[in-house]
Length: 334
Image (cartoon, rainbow, N blue to C red; front, top):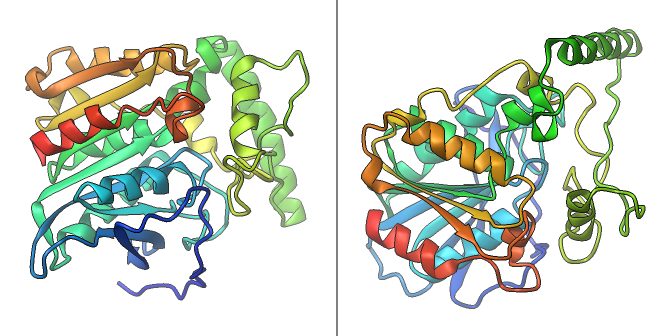
């Protein structure tokens, strides 16, 4: 497996302050599709030389980059003793792959499994103590990876989207009909024909400028408040800028994952905000996972009182990320 030559930014360009408790460096690894992924590695400075640490791979939200929420989670978990990486998915951020700004359920699941490959082969990692964290759309992807990969001993799913459900059914399942899906397929097919003729992909557009128009749904306002302000803006983030290709996430709309989550033997903690618009997706995924679960005793859905969807990206204005709960989960299972 040959690594692509990536041009990685070396200066600190995150949306959160750098911790003096961890060492930080850029690393790369390659997935089974031959795409080289870029990651920020965080390692506790207090770790004794020669120690094999428990390790955690973090990604998300969907359309974000490792300099945003995933890096915040990774750095915090390194502060409490884990070796962590926050990585950019294939075709996005500093990671490789072409054409750019595309996504795929199977390829993104592989991205998480490739991160486990990388961590499991580091000399300073105990390969029997590897976990993952998925945020927003990457929460569903992390759960999908946990169903496929028993090396993942503990999975944290934060403010989850099931991207296959929302892509195929629309928000709140409002477009869950054959008629609406057929119309969407026809429209997307026309875009594909036009793009092939032009030789160029069109971008779908990221979040609306903040503040969004007054009649915009509240959850869309919340996205703008995160991605389009200094709180969470990043130059490489799709959500902060031009978004995915119009056809970039098409594979998600005609697929369903999370099929075998009830066969996950290892531990899963799902956290969701009480007021999150996406809560129905997390609760639905948890119910499916528990239906005939082979090991229900190490699965939990934890609802964060008062929190919205984006509050679990960075804590929002109320320090909503339940760090004590998260730390206790990984301490127990890693």
